[in-house]
Image (cartoon, rainbow, N blue to C red; front, side, top):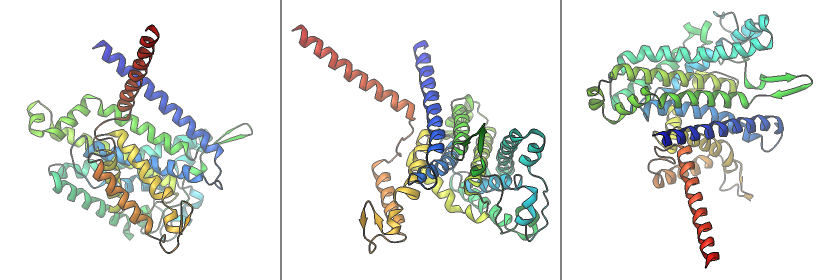
Length: 398
């Protein structure tokens, strides 16, 4: 028992060191790679990949660890994006953004706090706006969770999908224009390009570091939840509801906790997406977005947090970067405009997904986690090395 605890502590420390080094690398890349550089797409992949990674992990918490099949993720992300945008638009440009309406909300959280606290107030205002985005999404999840979580399987999926479509239509309703700007997009709010830290004469860019940091912190919190007693209750509900209830687990309570928590982080990912894109518009959050996130979860492995992260980054990298040449006529140095044309990228991408699903039935990671697999790989390497050393010693002795 003591040995197992030491091994777990060692794994946790190694994981923390790896995450810290990754954040340092991202911060360095932010300074080194210029927008005109060919590798600038790497920053785009990291930015969008972090958004979708958080969205996929939050969906996996609900679908993979609790066994609740929900398709309302795009709706909760929409709530988060709009909440963040509404509360961070500067007053000077608010009337320009709300061209056809008289804006009902007349203050910006970063602006208010900046006036009293300086640049620190801007950071604090953004953090509060992101948390508020998650809380609004969580509140709506609690409201619809009261009747909807009584449903199971496909019925729950249909109900949550209906909610996402309804909320998208409602946010474009003209009567709510003073708050949501109707069918018009929200813009000019605090976005990642404005995130900079000035130290003397040096300016440190944080446009990629901030969304990645938000994703890392939120995913770490989800990991802690999954490994807690609540997480074990979620897994028991997923495996067998009847047995879980017989063991004294309150099904309604734990399902609601999982649903609200998942929606909170979906709202945060929606706010981060608004930061990255620089706009918030209801039409960006269609049901296709939910299906894409679900695909990332399935590709990575249902029930694996690191699998969801890997699946999200690979999905974004392939669709946004690696296969782009298939739409422009040139791919891997091959110039074939008759074959490589607009839309061909999606065909090839679909074939790749089919191949991955055929050969990895449970996804890339299955229900395993990356630190665990790396630990096993390290043990095998050490074992092989020890055998080699032993055989050399025997040979020398002979």
